[in-house]
Structure formats: C-alpha cells, structure tokens
Length: 325
Image (tube, rainbow, N blue to C red):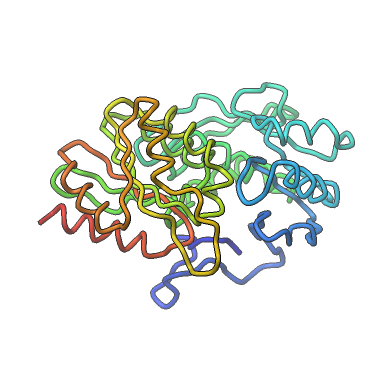
C-alpha cells in the first residue's frame, strides 16, 4: 500500500493503483499526518528522515521514536540528523543503517552517476563486503537514499544484496514524483509532489545537476502548512533557486472551512524576491498558466509542484499542449 499511484501496479483496468494484493507480507507507507502511526507495530520499520511537515519537530520526534522502538527491526538513514540520533539510542543490533556519505553505515552508496531521469550507484554492505551496482529509473541523490532504505528492508527479509539490487532496476517510479509530463517548443514540463521544504530542496538539487532554467509553480497544500512552514519555504526557495530561475505561486489549495489565512503565497514570494530571486504570486492558477507560457523559452524546464490536488497533473498536461500550440 502506498500513498500515491505506483506505476508498477498500474494496469488498463486499474489506472490509479496505489496498492497490489498478493504474497504473505504486508508492506505499507505510513506517515505522521494524522498521528495514526502511533498505532503501528512494524516487524520491520524503515525511517528515511524526520523533518518538519504536518506537525512540530517535538511531536514528530515522539511519534517516530515510538514507531521505531515498537518495531522488531529498524532501517535508519544516517544522513538525516534526527534519524541518526535515533539510531544511537536503539539497542545494539536492532538497527541497520544506510548512508551516502558515512562509511560506518551498514549500507553505503558510492560511484553515484546521475542522469536527467535516472541515477546509478554502487552499494556496499559493510558486514560482508559485498557490492552491487544499481541503476535506478528515478533521478536524484534522494532516490539513492530511498533505494538504500529499500535494500535494507529487503536484506532484513532475507533477500540477497544482488537480488535486491536487480529488483530495483525494475522500479517504474511513483506518479507525480519528478514525473516527466512532456516537452513542446523546446520546453520540458515536470510534475512533482514536492510540498515541504525538504522535498522541494531535493527536487531543485536534482534538476540543477543539469542545464536549463527552472520555472517553478508551487501550489501550497493548505493555509495551515503555509503558515507553519513559512520561513522554511522562504529559506528553501531563496537558497535552492538559481539565478535566472523563477518561482510562481498561486493561492494555496483550499477545501473550505474556517482556516486562518493570515499567511498568503504573496508573503512567501515577497520574501524570496527580497533575497534576490525572481518570485511572483497570483490569485489563481489561470494567471500562473499565462505567466508560465509568457516566460517559457527553449531549454527551460517547468516544474509543477504541490500536494493534495490531483488537478495539478491535468494542469501540467494542458500546459504541454498549450506550449505546443
């Protein structure tokens, strides 16, 4: 079970498959958004990172500490300070660790070779000295980290390193995770679920490894998250955008209610612009659409970012069509 459409699970009859049934294992993506993670007791718990998103860091530390302490075995990322701190607190032998940089980890990635829409690396298992080459059909160093986490979970299930590495090469990706929508007029359009500062930073870093200006339309996933992560969003875009890139923001996605609207998209773009990056806010997406088309020139990459709104994918597809016209 996954929180987004898994391309490996999709069939003609099930175009929006986020789950598949079969086998004697239950594998599920869980997160902290509604607090229900406090009810999970995993045989194998995989924790990629702890970073501000739906709750404060203090709440997240408690929730995730309980999650890993209840688990039978744990796979943890040493490249994230919060999960590395958790690893130090667990009993010896309970956690298997992974890293892109720390040679003390149980699984370490090296010889990383990025491509525009994929990445290759060599994984080394410290205990056995075994090595395997992996070509992952998903770009970015953050996906190397995700792949190490998957290998760690597979090893905990008794799968060999070579089998795990080979299986990853058949991973088709997840819908709206750095998904190439299409190209027209020399402009490439990418659809991406990035919605918190860490995910946005990972996407920007991945795309900046290759040439081409970025036109980023980021739709915040609600007024509450925008208010809670206001400064982190400003810092992330001010530091993550390159000279020449442009940030465009519509109002947050809104589903009704008495939400506090004290922080707007304009507050974010205004602060980003004050720090020397091009940033604009518009009241609605139609205006964003017009501005993206006006700005786009051959060699640019347009990135549509945001969560909780499936119409962003339609927006991205329609944008390709309009650029073609």
